[in-house]
Length: 116
Image 1 (cartoon, rainbow, N blue to C red):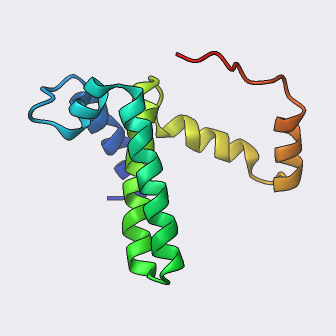
Image 2 (image 1 turned 90 degrees about the horizontal axis):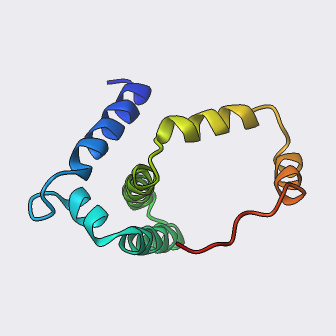
Image 3 (image 1 turned 45 degrees about the horizontal axis):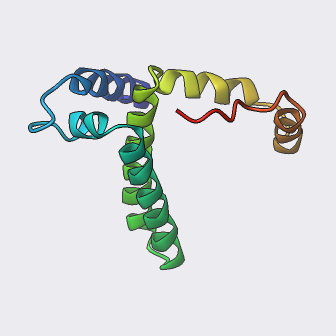
């Protein structure tokens, strides 16, 4: 399975599981618990990526990044968007200096700081 196919399939599975029984689906249980639970998992997984890297464990870094990406995809699903939107954003940034791209975001209108 190619990577784009894998991302599309995983996105579809996440959408299907969103409405599943929280007792039988980990993804459904995260959605049932709400955004804070999803964000907590992302924080935990990010910390595990950092620890694996600091421990010089490349294979573990791969596994932990996979966990992090998975939970980020759950968050995208929570917001009603998918990985394709992230890939499109990355595609728009191709060929633009990272420093220029960051500066364009810094000078853009401030993000909405309203909490849900």
